Length: 236
Image 1 (cartoon, rainbow, N blue to C red):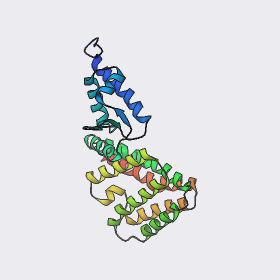
Image 2: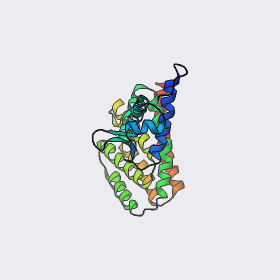
Image 3: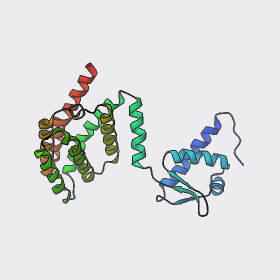
Image 4: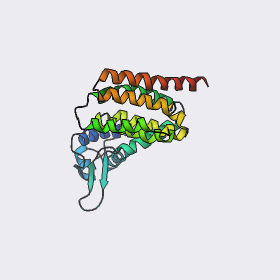
């Protein structure tokens, strides 16, 4: 039997409590693990099936729950899909005009740490890949190449350093900036030669396995430029 509500505000509270409980159960198991049927979960949680259905809708929206119908069906735990999280976060940034500047500020700051961490990478096979990307950057001849090459550089740094939150923030910030303004100089803050010099200095420091220098070059050639762009945007 459904616990009786003491007041009109008790029902949402019950759903929140049960959602927290089931969320912890999902994270304690492997993705795809069965959680039980609707009736089984209702009995296990000591609530009615309506509450379980409400909890299921919350967790489905979070990307934590699969509801399968038919024989062998039921409720199954899962992990959020980063693409869905990026879409939701990107939509939020588009609805808050100043949040893009904040995201750009944060990602440029974290980029310093990413470059330093890449220099500490223990997988030696990743360094020749980075070196090859650096060679392409150094020999690029058109500003139209900045976007694709920058994307490849970011992807390689992500592979060298497992930083999921920073990766998501960076992808979203880059996507929103492209939707806000298609001009390359606005997106990257500088022209081809300055961008080449910046990325070449950073890559050389990473290849030298010098974390302090990689952090210094990222701050000197990237973050300071981002701060200049944000200052100009704030005063324009």
